[in-house]
Image (cartoon, rainbow, N blue to C red; front, side, top):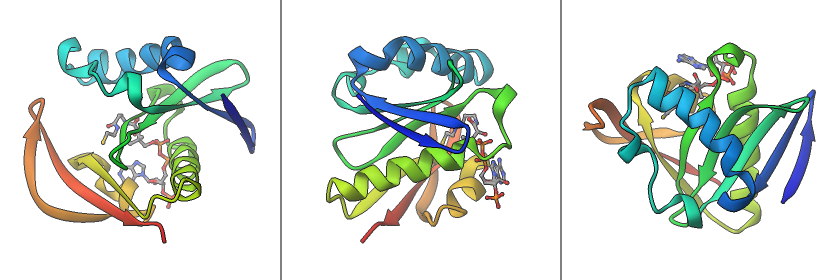
Length: 146
Ligand code: COA
């Protein structure tokens, strides 16, 4: 596991085995309970082979995301109680830096429509048309990290 301290928050990256309790707690609250995504859609085979990130406020896990082997970032989630504080941005900047350090030149993600301005603010650009995933409009977005 790797730890980074940024402002008041600590970001930890590690394997699914190392971080799944916290990642599961956050994703259950955000995607399954808040966004009504079916549990069978939320958990997939990518979890066991992705690099996971958790943001901690003191000892409380408040945000998560995963960096997949195919150079995409997914399952970006901040607890509703902690949104609008810059935590999502902090988390994304950390993942982008890790991806860059790993020599990845392009990062992809599938953005829920409401989150497009959030990703635009980090430099991601929309690509292609909207499509439905789990009944939610999404669009592909790319960031060049060279
Ligand atoms: N619409 C417009 N701008 C937004 C936004 C939104 N929905 N959410 C964040 N932003 C902007 C902020 O204003 C801020 O702008 P600034 O840098 O100019 O000040 C910037 O994005 C960073 O915001 P931040 O406070 O770091 O975002 P957050 O911690 O609230 O996290 C999400 C953003 C999308 C991760 C969070 O709302 C979330 O977890 N939502 C539920 C799960 C979800 O939909 N995840 C995305 C799946 S693709």
